[in-house]
Image (cartoon, rainbow over all chains, first blue to last red; front, top):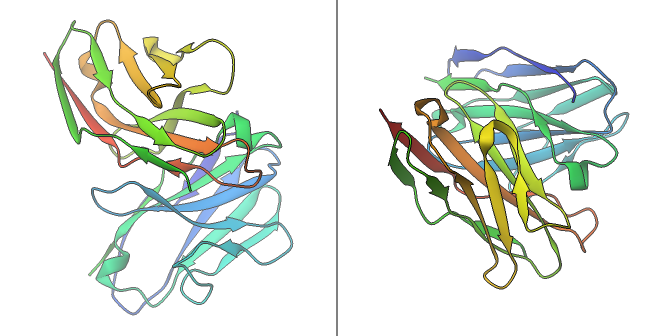
Length: 116
Length: 115
C-alpha cells in the first residue's frame, strides 16, 4: 500500500493565522482526501482533492476556509485559514487507488493542530 | 443515508481475555465494512474489511470480525487481548450500491487492555 508523509506532525498557531499541511505519497494515487478529527470525536470528511481541478467539499466546509491544492497525483495541501480555537483538531490525509471504494484508504499520521 | 454506531465509548479487558468491540450499521444497499485502529499520535491503520464472501473476516494482528446481515453488525474480536492492543478503534461503512458515496466512520471505541 502507499506510504504517506504528512507534515507538520503538530503545530501550535495563533488565532487569525493560517497553516498549510502537506501530504506526499510515494506513488501515484487516484483519490486523495482530507479529514478532520476533532478532540474526542470521529473522522469527518472535509473534501476530496481532485488533481488538476477544484476540490469537492462536503457540507459544512468551504473553500475560503479550507483551500486545497492537488498539483499532481502524489501531492496535496490543505490550508486552514484564519484559524480560531475551534479549528484545533487532528487533520488527516488519506489516499485510495482505483479500487478505493472497496479497498478502503491509507491514512497519513495526521497533523495535530492547536490554535491559541 | 448510511450510518455507523459503536455503542461503547470505552471497552476494558484484561490481558489474555477475549475482546469484542461492537459495530452496527445502516445502509440501504449492500455494505462494505471496515475496521481501522488509531494508536496515540498516529494516523489510522487498516485492520480488516468485509466486501463479500465469508462472514468471518480475518485481519491484521490476530483480529477478526463477523458480518451479521440480519443484525446489521460487524463486531471486531480477538481471542486473546494484548496490552499493545490498547488504542482507538473505528468502524466504517459504505453503501456499495451507491457508487461515489464515501465512507462514514463510527464515533470510535477506546480499548484498554489491562495487564
